[in-house]
Amino acid sequence: MAAKLLLLFAVCRLIAIVGLTLNPTDLFRVGLDGHLNTDQDDIKSASTDFGKMTRSEPLAVLHPASAADISNLLKLAYESPRGFPVSARGHGHSINGQSQTQNGVVVQMSRSKTNPSVPVVPVVSENMMYVDVWGGELWIDVLKSTLKYGLAPKSWTDYLYLSVGGTLSNAGISGQAFNHGPQISNVHEMDVVTGRGDVVTCSLDHNPELFHSVLGGLGQFGIITRARIALEPSPQMIRWIRVLYSNFSAFTHDQEYLISLHDQPHSQKFDYIEGFVIVDEGLINNWRSSSFSPNNPVKISSLGAGTGGNVLYCLEITKNYHVGENPKTIDQEVEALLKKLNYIPASMFTTDLPYVDFLDRVHTAELKLRSKGLWEVPHPWLNLFVPKSRIADFDKGVFKGILGNKTSGPILIYPMNKKKWDERSSVVTPNEDVFYLVALLRSALDNGEETLTLKHLSDENRKILNFCKESKIEAKQYLPHYTTQKEWMDHYGDKWPQIYRRKMEFDPRYILATGQRIFDPSFASDPRSLW
Image (spheres, rainbow, N blue to C red):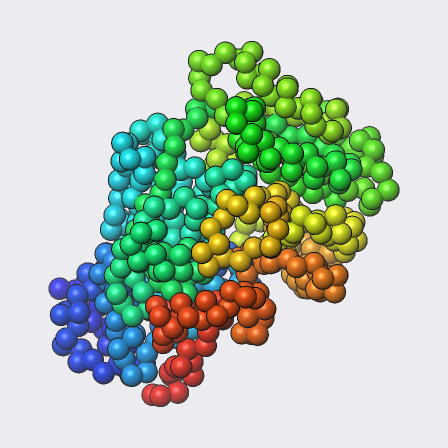
């Protein structure tokens, strides 16, 4: 009874603020079985995100017990004369407040202390090779569930403590995307709650317009409550290799060659291909994980980085295998592939480790950063898709130009095959067969160094975007952030009419994901002024 009274109080507060035409005594017929919290700790948690650069305070946080809870909440918002915004939040790993909402309700999709169990536990179909998961499930928990059957999802993100719904709302990419495509290319079916409050099952064959809208849709068209993810037999071990380049052309040539091998039947190939940029002398012996421990430190000068601003490029590749396979066979396959590459011979590092340890490698780094107080800091990240034809210009203008010798975080760069992406999704990518992800994953630190401050790094990001614009490099932001609809229209380009039409069909009152700032809701004025 106490819990129901608290829930009643919270909803009555919401009704008073946003002016819902709902009698409080009707609340129990609405059927919210989860927890609708106005607790300040809950509000504070939902008001910020991993980026630590923006803050928006919701009126309440819903911890749903089912998709029906989310549906009922959205029906309240949709049917109310004044309405209120609703945003889904998974692990809160957004950068610019994309999962926040001002004066509305945040739906906390992932497990929490107040809602330790999620509505749907992962259910694996061994025969059909898929897993059904709740939209707020973290990928690390999906992996743990599927590995019990010797299976794993095909496509990943580098960091596994992200929610399924969160990554599918963006795309979900890592070093497997060149082969399997992004995570959104590996979904069979979803249950989605639209901005009207309708719970809809969708797939390629059933409600396909909603299916394609939601995948990469930045939360604009619905909240994913269940996703059916494609699986494959999981490898047990991986051979993890890193080699260095001083020549950018050789580096990109080898990356593009390696991703092309998957188009050749029966050819030997690597299973994961990424890369990153080293512009800081101090980073060269820190860019490895603890799995890489050379006896002697490496110096950029000793590797002949040349005159390009002492910039080095690291190619990161893996080969999957199973325990019991002949080690000589793995050695021969890896050696045959490496012989065709033009890296600096003295720079190779290699290690073998369990597949799950490799996939969860970033979490190990996270724990180290947390222990040093370096995790809960602002993260002015910038992620771009750069067309292959202009990646050399980007290197010259950004890596060897705009960036200084203090990066304050990894800079990833690796190619993907456009044909592995479904053009019907809501994601936009460069119009070339191959394009690169360039991810500047930097942290702002207040340690007395001006080059590491939030202002400096944010200014550098703006310089990079301006450089692309002035140089007519048709890059597209991944995890995009804009502040005006005109910028969003430019981002989507020819796809904008489709995005607008989808919004009008599935969220005509602009209730969902207002933190993205794509559409301004009709109730955008501060409802507190209505008191």
